[in-house]
Length: 221
Image: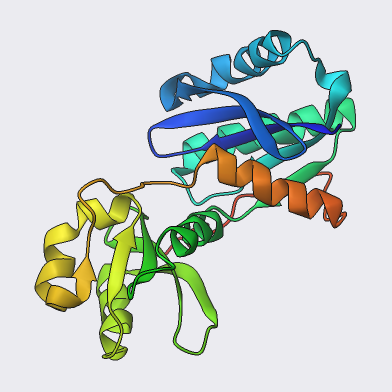
């Protein structure tokens, strides 16, 4: 059996998970404001609860964002530090792609195309969706550009997920009308379960790293 540790930053908290062959067996979260001093103790506590130690961990799964930069930096620095100190390899995942993949599975029996919209601060959003030619778009764009891109596909109906969907609900509805569905309860971020499952696939494919960096960093002016 292969055991792994998973770490990710969200917009409100940090997730830690312990996995066996990619399946989540235990998880916990910590408010993002406490991450810098309590993330490592939380990892230790979870490992003790499942009667494991870092010596039993084969790899560390890490969500590389997007997420609020300070929180994301704290989590990635923690993962890089653990990897350096223990020689445990890292397996990185794209948070936009994780949430989109979860959404594609959830809505595959519907006529709606999932669109991930995460808050990028300012008037920008991190956006991810599958285009009509089946190619995927992932990136940081202005909110208006995101809406314009969706509007160009006149035959497409969409379901929005991510915390940006709720933040900008009124504007999306005003611009796209009945072509947009925003669920009453929106999944705001990729689950720790999805992180573990994707990292397991990457680990089996030997896609590992000694260090990872944040994704989707906005360029400074």
